[in-house]
Amino acid sequence: MLSHPTSQTLNALGLGGMAKALEEQRAMQGIEELCFEERLALLIDREKLHRMNRRLTTRLKKAKLRHAACFEDIDLHSPRGLDKTLVMSLGSCSWVGKGYNVLITGATGVGKSFLACALAHKACLEGFDALYMRLPRLMEDLLIAKADGRYGKLMRSFAKTPLLVIDDWGLTPMTPATCRELLELLEDRHGRHSTIVTSQLPVAAWHEYLADATVADAILDRLVHNAYQLNLKGESMRKMKSIIDPN
Ligand SMILES: Nc1ncnc2c1ncn2[C@@H]1O[C@H](COP(=O)(O)OP(=O)(O)OP(=O)(O)O)[C@@H](O)[C@H]1O
Image (tube, rainbow, N blue to C red):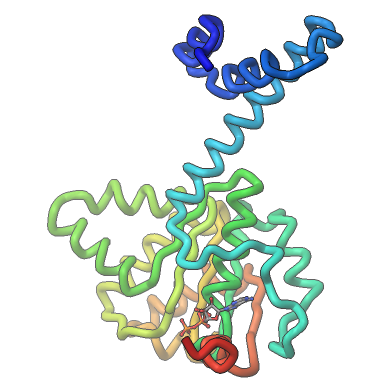
């Protein structure tokens, strides 16, 4: 079907949602029973929805979440020591962007990254920008940016992200220099933006993990005191999945 000149004009004006809805209305039987304002309202609603969906798609793409996990996919029933009330209240996202953090710890495969991504996905749905990074990759990116003059810009972009997910904390050794960079990043975010950290190490072992004792104090002061903590227990989900589906 050839598109109507008005639809073409709407598309040219960047009103793709309205254009599509207009084409649908033209093909719809009985549409003329609606008055002008009712039809116009439907077109405007459609454009609003179209824009919201486009913004969400862009936000999720930029967040680079490792798992395609939704908040509703979080398994609250397996015996993993998950505090259901806390998880449900985190789903409101009222903590995001206020400087509150979430620290998720537990053994390998227990579902820490999945949970972090599900919370970040919910934050994206609620309109917050998010970014997922593994700590080793975050430190490597900062190192490369230092060498090619992008350090300040990269640091600013990490610093202003409303929700930063730092996965795999404690997996690779930190040097005093990387600890200082991490402190700089967390200092810029402190009290303003939220961070989710996932780690196989219990929070009590983080001080020892960070190479410089004084910097470690400062890092933990910014990260832990204003944080909700979730300690996952039980079997590795990776192992359980491979038992259910060995292929
Ligand atoms: N609620 C869930 N529903 C379905 N699959 C899940 C769920 N939680 C975790 N998984 C799956 O279990 C596997 C391990 O999860 P995840 O990567 O989150 O574990 P992890 O604790 O972060 O592991 P590691 O410490 O090794 O990085 C993944 O394949 C993930 O998709």
